[in-house]
Amino acid sequence: MDSLDVKYEKLKELIKEKGKNGVVVAFSGGVDSSTLAAVAYAVLGEKVVAVTAKSPTYPREEVEAAEEVAKEIGIKWYTIETNELTNTKFTKNPENRCYYCKKELLTKLVETAHTLGFEAVFEGTNFSDLSDHRPGFKAVKEAANVYSPWVESGFTKQEIRSVAKKLGLSVENKPPLACLASRIPYHQKITEEKLRRVEKAEQTIKEIAKIRQLRVRDHNGLARIEVAKDEMDNVLDMNILDEISVRLKMIGFRYVALDAEGYRSGSLLKSKNTITSSK
Image (cartoon, rainbow, N blue to C red; front, side, top):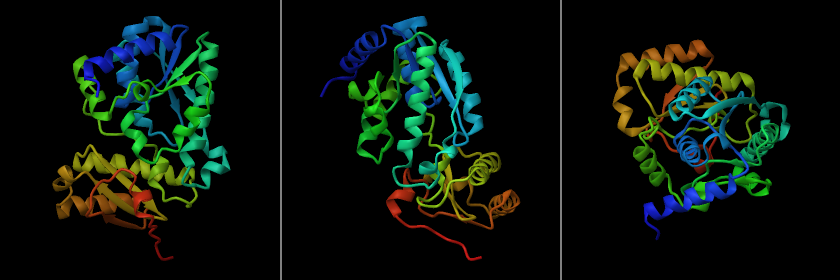
């Protein structure tokens, strides 16, 4: 197993080679894409830009956060518009939903790269991701001139956090991001209304309970709240739970439930269960 220093040198060489004719980094503002952008900028300078896709499935507060991280790095930052909700293959919400989202995103990023006179696109999938359900990575492998430097250099999630710490990035310990569609059980239709309801619910709970890591899963109007176990004490107070329940019902949920198992990445896929509320 290569040491972190060896992997880091390999990463920089890969970036130098693949990005020599200019590169666009798919930039969500999370730890993976931010650290990749920072390393690429250190290697390539003005030959690299960060591009964030504004989409109905992407929390609006994260667009603002991405801009701040880009400023921190010093890299040029652009936004583009994508809209997965126009694709019925996506809105039907199959288990390979992410494939259709990623395919549209990469198509737009490649177009953006060409508009800027650049050749390549870097995206932030890491080696740890490959052991999980990642249908979107199929779109990466299908696309021309799109590369996954973390995967090609063998970097795990924890190793990326180590690099972020070494570079002094503020996102070093940022919780994992996931698009808002991941809150809706598979095969239940994805709509603009559900996405906005989930987004508002998560913002509300963060505001009330001062929580960093949570998901609000939308089961046909039942809000199933997953909170990181080390933050569970923040919500285990009847006054806080009552306020959360009232506020989420004002947003449009009919029922509100706290999941005793806490936050789990990909819980909707792992459980294979859907919860439906009575009408």
